[in-house]
Image (cartoon, rainbow, N blue to C red; front, side, top):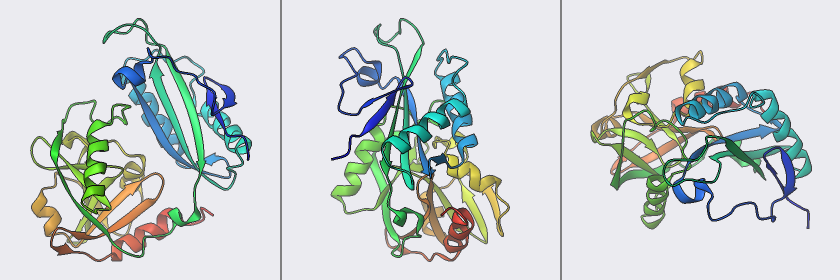
Length: 279
């Protein structure tokens, strides 16, 4: 059986080797953030957007990021880890950053530690889903709309419970609402609707995670207009299509939300543009 490695603070060690104590601040408080990225042949896709978001998150969380924390530094480590783990074709990469041990809620210092993990991805993730997803709203939590809501935080409890709810109710994905009863995002994706030939997604002020694929789509030259606007449940029910996006799969289309059914014409176009020339 092949040895699996992780990268811990720049060093490559066996994934089975213990590295945490009970005082780890990510374990105790969820004190940190993470990036989930797709790597093709060891190269991180949309790396500029990923590390732009990472640096913004570290700033918001008051980490004292060292000068070595650059896109080049992390992408070099990721490429090496993919090679060591033989994840050379298509890989999921998770970069987790957490504050150094010590303190109660107030930390002793703001030095960041990091772990990089890779896992092999099936090429199927690059194919548009043949069957539309079935989704609904998670009723038991509401996302805040503060400046921390947009971060991919190590404190993921609402998303965990929403994912459990989805599994219990045989849903493919679950929508999280904000305190204004409007759409924020889903357990692992940002949400877009297609309405009147427009692609619409909630603005960051609605409490959604600042998704890399979301930003990439907003910045793309597309055959339809992309706008940011708050979305209600009624907007979902009256939409022509509902799309879910993230950095791993790109885009997936929703076939059913409650009693409403949807097509995938725009999803097909967007999928082809996103994955053109990837493999």
